[in-house]
Length: 116
Image (cartoon, rainbow, N blue to C red; front, side, top):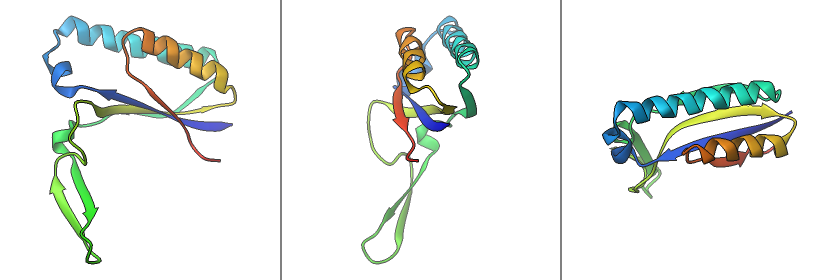
């Protein structure tokens, strides 16, 4: 079986402003995705939301053999990675189709294959 990383980018500031019913709709979408994955024989290895990017710690080479450590995300952008799925599957075409359906319900998805 091959492994895939499904990254979930989202505009954190916009998401925080959504009413509770929109958050519930998102949770229902994730629940449906879990059911679809299980029905297709795809295995969730790990799934999790991430803390807000403002709580991230960035570490970069300082050019002198050390590292510069700073609070906050590595890059400034409108969208941040807010969660992920690590999936094991032997049917990439079907997995892509399930991810496409997941996205059609309003989810942003970045689909990545892990090297074998």
